[in-house]
Amino acid sequence: MDLREFFIEDRLEKFRTEASCNLGESGIRNLDLGHLAEYLNLDLRELGKLSLADSPNSGRKDLREEIAKLYKNVSPDQVLVTTGTGEALFIAFHLLLQSGDIASLFWPAFQALYEVPRSLGGNLQKVNLLPRLESQELGFGKENVNLLFQNSPKLIVFNHPHNPTGIIAEEEDKKEIQKLAANFPNWILFDEHYRFLSEEEDLGWSGFGICENSISTGSITKCFGVMGLRIGWLIGPKNWIVQARSMKDYLTHTVSPISEFLTLKLLQNRKTLQGKIKETLNANIRNFAHAAASDKLPGVVSFKEPRGGVVGFAKLQTGLDSRKFADLLYEKAGVFVLPSADFETEGYIRLGFGETEERFRLGLERWSNLGSEVIALLNK
Image (cartoon, rainbow, N blue to C red):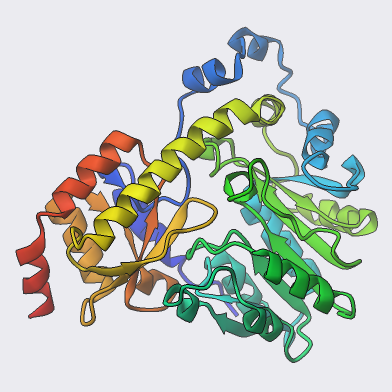
């Protein structure tokens, strides 16, 4: 099968650079190099000494050592540095899935997590999370975790903190997946892009190592406002990582030594920047939740605060088309959001909370004045 259009990317390309309030992105508002250097206490003259030769195919060793520290009992030989998590996922799916295999995941989902398995001939087993957004309960839920393991899938994709809902693995979820993984003969992929921005004080829980056939993906790009560095990684058993590195040789082969250098410095000095980002992120989430609960955001009827990551799903008033509503917000208020239709479901919008506090606040103020336009949209 062919890969279909990446639904969210077309809208992102059109609006993300022009929006006065960008709530469509799934990462923190990007820093410039000067501000990053200031936060990390980095002398940019160090870049002048950097060789522009190819990096090692697996990634420079000191960077792999630093990434390994983010996990329990992981060695640098279990780390493959990749061009973002997109490449890491692409490699993993091609190594683990064949036509007819079942890939099980939570739904709705980021398209790369199911589109590549679908293109390989995989059968998707979707576990619907939307009822959890309508309940007061936290986490994925014991029943939903069990549903992931139904029909003995060849691969389970456990994305947490979850994009687009913001759900994290709570203690009950962790215990349940640990119990089920003990007798599971196939593979579990933990897609953990947002580990740096979870409810936990430092790093969110990682499922890597929960069973012999577990792998994990991660990145610094969305959590630290450095999307342009395009650095991600793949964690797995040593022998499997050797296979993954061989496949990477057919794709990007190596990553930029400049991106590797800056990523290394960021990871070595991440905690100060991480704290600042969490403060802004949490303030934006609280402000949105308060405005939604006070009926100050026309079109939104409910919102469950994300417990991790940068994004959340807000439920729309019955009868609103999510694409038309997203268009209205952009055209009338300069607020860019993603319609749930781009996640192949309806009735919601996905919001990113990585905008600056000032731009976020002004965007909400303009949104609050759209009452009559939303009513007109409902009556069309």
